[in-house]
Length: 637
Image 1 (cartoon, rainbow, N blue to C red):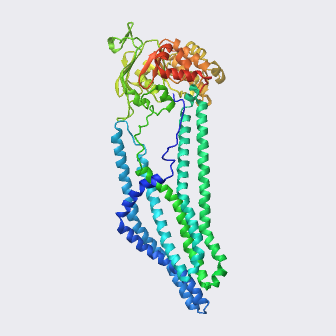
Image 2 (cartoon, one colour):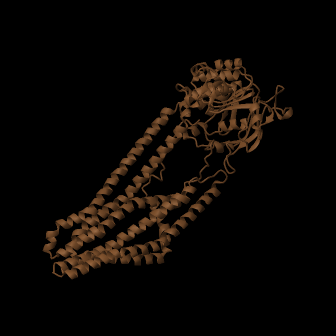
């Protein structure tokens, strides 16, 4: 049972981004060095954009000074036509730029796909069986596409700003050098302030992302382990840890918002202050011989070319640039190390649980392969019984596992590895252990709904693997955590596994398991049942009564009482244990383990089996679980 759900912020993810930049820069230089031809053709097309930016402002200035103010309307219109043609020529220029851009983005995508595939294969070779690169599909699809689109947008934006800025600044210089004295300082200051925010902004984004991932992971694992947190008494500790993660995420969000405010200020300085400075400096500029046409041309350069390009550059670097850096670092950055394939019964345990176990394997599934385990009711090896079962005082074993191994996948680590188990007829066995250790897997194997990867599973001396459902129904009843109740009468639900049950038998089951209030509320055994109108606990009581009436000699309860209060759970288990036959219970409360004849502890390195007192003496994990169970009131889940 996972008694806590911890999440740690990834140290690398919380870095300042400089490490990622250093790792990516050599690859970027080699990539660009091999494509000098594409870059040269892209630069030639961009030179046309420089000429376009130059002609727009220059044409406006000449139209005013040499045309309209000089009384020559035709010349003024001619220069305005030059400026208009320069604007219209932007369409073929952009088309040529996009044509050359494909020569950069498509090889980048292909290279990243090859890199991601090679990395995933190399990790699989290192990890060996059970290894799995869970992020491989994301890298090959979503992340590669994000990298390509971000790179394309960044190339377009940076190229456009550089060549547009060159054309506009040359135009300002050609109109009058004093214009540069006014425009350049606020423009350069805003750009410098923006560039200074890139690294801390990237670091704040990475910290916010890491904090959000850690909080989401903690919430998901805590939600999945709510019953375990309650049973182990570690809910307050998990809540405190969650509160700390929330505070950390809030602090990261505030830091990110602070740097976003600085970036907005930089955008305002670079995007609006040059225009304001030019307006305020008009008298000073006029005193130095700057003509009205030159002033209007300067405003045209700022509003039409320079400031839109600068705004686009800042937006792209702040969004696409940071996104590209993070994604490239995910794809070609350092390998985060081997991963273990996530399996239904093999989830990582918190550090506190691993410390309680001592120096053992890092995950329950891996630890199971450490050595073969045996769990017999007697100390000696049981002798084979006629018919394939195991003799216990002349009786065939109720449940017997012989070297049973179960893996979820050919390359996955086994959840159960060479497990031997013998349960005597009429015995009450409780199975305990952390979440993901294999308790539900064990019950499914015994029930015959899951086939082992190796070994034999026998019930009443008969192998269950491969048997027809009707044959299995005569051997055992499995009651899962989510109880099944169908639409029909209450009596039909109770006798589903034993149609020949008499009314006296049904009344006895109803009274023994405490179903009388439900029967009276519904209006008798012939009343119609609407499953959605029953509580989880009521549905579990119906399923338990159905199992009680079943003729099968083996009952398997896989946390089938988790929605009952402790008193109702104790009553149900006592009644089912007193029924003729064998009872195997996956326990989630200490009281369930204490009531059993024997306790089976699945503990990563060995399966310890014995009475409650014997297992307390032999199993450190059981002592640890018992301590958690006993520290506070045990509540129903």
